[in-house]
Image (cartoon, rainbow, N blue to C red; front, side, top):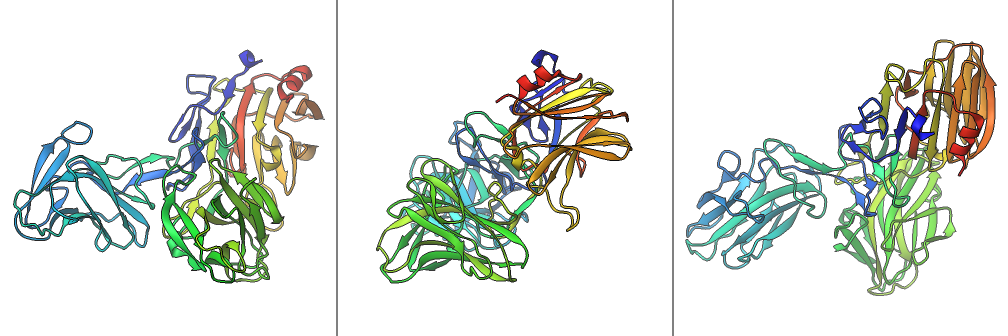
Length: 555
C-alpha cells in the first residue's frame, strides 16, 4: 500500500519553517510550519534531554575590533591571536601600570530588563591574583586565569546594557595580558554551547518555527503539536527568586533534565514545621490551572506538590520519587530519565486570589542536611500539562504549532473526488484536548479536511468525545471514535465515507453531494491545536478497500 500512497509523512526531516515528507521527495508533500516569534518551545531530543531554543545576545562575539567593542582606558588590544580552536579570531588585551582596564560592549539594547542571564568567554593570560572579572554593569564574577584557554562564566541579573571583561589591575606590571575569544551572553543560569554572532544575535536549538520531533515516547520521534500556552511563573529555573522555608537552596548543584548543571538543591534544616519552597501568582476564579515541577530524589525520596491555599485552588499530590508513583492526592508523574520526574497537579481556582505553588519535603522536625533537587517549575491555564516552557524573569508564551499544506489536487496528492488518509497518534483522546474554547456555547474546534459550501468532512473534538462529521447538503452525520484509539483511516469517494480505527470498521456514511479535498486545515486554517504526538500520516489518491484500511490500522 505504501507504493500506492501519494504522501508519506513520518516525522524525520525538518528545518526551521518546514516539515519534509518522505514521499513525494520533490517538495510537493512538504508542510510549511510556524509557531511564533520566540524561543519558548522545548522538546525531548534523541538523547532523552529537554532541548531549548538558545540565543547569543551579543553582537560580534568573535570580532573584538574597536568599531564593535569599547576599549577602556589603560588597555591596548591586538587582533588575530590564535583562538581555542586553532584559528586566529582571538584578541589580546595588554595593560599598563594603571588600574581598572578592560573591554566591554555597550551598543546593545536587546538584553531586556530584569532577566536571568549568564556571561561566558574563553580567557587565558598572566594577570596576577583574582583580578579579572566578567559579567555586566553590577554583577561581575572574579576568575583566576591560567596559561591555557579556559571558558569562564558569570551570573548576571541586573538591567545593564553591556557585557564586560574587566580587571582591577593591582600588580602594576605592564606585561600583564589577557587573551580573549568566543564571548556569549544568554538567558539562563549556566553557559551553553557557544553560538557565533556577527552583525546580529544568533540562535540555536529549537527555533521559533521549527517542527518539534519529540523522542519522549522512545527511540522513534513523533511530531509534537500543541496549542498556545503560557508559563505564568516569571522564574521557572531561578529558585533564588522563590520563598524558602526551613531549609536552604544551592544553585547549579546537579545536572538537570536538559543535561547541564542548572538544577537547584533544597536541603532541610532541623526546625519543626513545613519544609518547602513557594512561588505565588495571581489566579482567577473559574479558571483551571495545571502546575508542574521536575524533582529528583537524593536523601529525600518523597515530595508534595500543591497549593498554598487549597480552599481557593485545591491542587495537591504527594509523589514517590523512588518508584515514580503518586502516593496520595490527585496528580500525574512522568519519568524523564536519570531519576528525574515531572510531578503534575491540576485544579480549578474557585476564588480570585494570590496563591502559591509549594514544593514540600516534610512536616515536623527537619532532617538536617537531607535534600532533593528541583528544576523547571511551570504553571499554565488548562486542564492538562504541555511541554516545558522556560522563563527567566517574566512569564513566557509559546504559540501553537501550525503545520499546513494546500493545493493537494494540483500536486497529485488527492484525487478530485476520492482519497484516503491514515493517522497514527499517541492517543486519539488527546487529539483535540489542546484546542482553545472560543466561548461557553461552542466548546469545540475542528479539522476540515476538504469540502464545498454544502458538503465537507471534518474531525471534531467535543469535550471528551471525538468523531468524524460529514456534512451533506447541510445535514450532518457522525461516526464516533473510542478514546484510546491510536490508528485512524478515513476513506471516501462519490458514494460516501468510511472510518476505521485500530483494525475495525467504525462506520460508514453515504452522500449525494460532491466533496473535493484541496487543503488540510483546522478551524483557524491549519492542521494544528491537536495537543498530541503525531507519529505518522499517509495519504492515498484513491479510496482503500475495507481489507486495506483494516490492515493499515491494525495495532
